[in-house]
Image 1: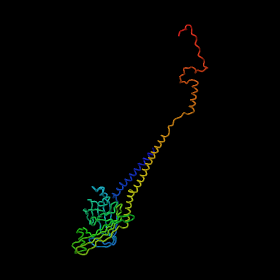
Image 2: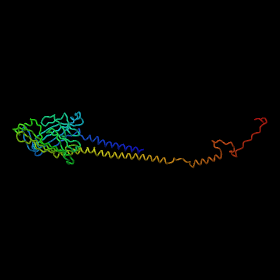
Image 3: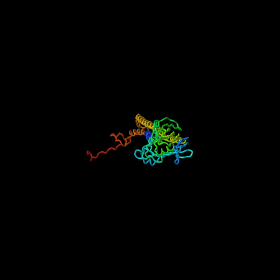
Image 4: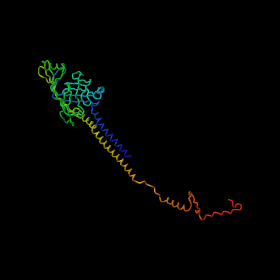
Length: 391
C-alpha cells in the first residue's frame, strides 16, 4: 500500500514538473520577450573623426572641420505609458529620446533634437500615437508620423529585410539583411540601409539663410541627403550592438556651386559597443535560462519522476498479486489434537467409565455396577396377619 502511494506521488510530481516546463516555454518566456515597463535609461555615443559640418553660432553660419561626438539618451516614461489607451494599452511603451552632436575639441553644440514616441513592446517598431512629437528645429512637430524600426529591432530578429525610420527624411526606408558578424562574443545580424541623394523637406526659414550665405546669387535650391546606415543587431533581444552612419548633406542652389554641409562617418565608440553587448548578454542569459535550461531540467526531472512513479506503482501491484496467489496456494491450517494433557484426560476418562458412572450420565437399568463390598439390601419383614393379602 505504501509503495502504491509513493508511486502515485512520484507520478503526480512528474506531471506537475512537465506542466511547469511547458508553462515556462509557452507563457513565461513570451511575457519576458517584451520591452519592460521599468526599462533603465541608456546612453549611446557615436564619434566621427575629421568630419566636415555646418555650425551656426549667434547668427554666424560656417562650415568647420573637426571631430564630432553624438550622444543619444533614451528614457522610458512610466506615466505616459500608463496613460496609453485603446490598442496601445499593454502593447506599447513610451520613450523620450534626446540627441546632441558636439565638437570634441571645445564641446560646442553643433545640432540637437528631441522626440517622444510609442514603441511596440515586442517588435520594437514605432506605433501611431497622438502624443508623439519631434523637435529638431526648436519647435515640436506633433504631425510627425513615426513608423518602422528606429532604436530597436524585434525580439528574435529574423534574417530578412526590415524598414528603418530616417529622422531627416521623416520616412521609412528598407534595411536589407547583409549577413552575420561576431561582435564581443555575440553573433549579430547586420542590416544595411542606403539612402542616396534624396531631397530634404526644409522650410524657407532654414533654406534661405543657407542660400544667402553659400550661394548669394541663387533664388532657389535644395539640400540633398545621403546616408549609408549599418546596424548590427543582437537577434535574440533586438538590441543595437553597433551602429554606423556615413552621412552627407549637400546644398544644391539653382545658381552657383554645391556646398557640402555635412560629411561625417559616425560609429559607436568602443565603450558603447561593450556596454550594448553586455546588456544584450544579460538579457539573452535571462531568456535562455527561462526558455531553455530551466524547462529542459524540469522536463527531464519530471519524466524521471513520472516513469519512476509508474514503475513503483506497477511493482507494488505485482507484489500484491503475487502475495494473493501465494496465500491461495497454501492450505488452510487445521489444529490437530495435542498429545499430552488432553490425551491423559482421555485415558482417565476411559478409566472412570470402567469404575463408575459420570455425574452427568444416566445409570443403566442394571444394578451390576454396584461394588461387591457394598452391603446387601435388608430383606423385607414378613407381612403381618393384619396386613396379609392387602396390597
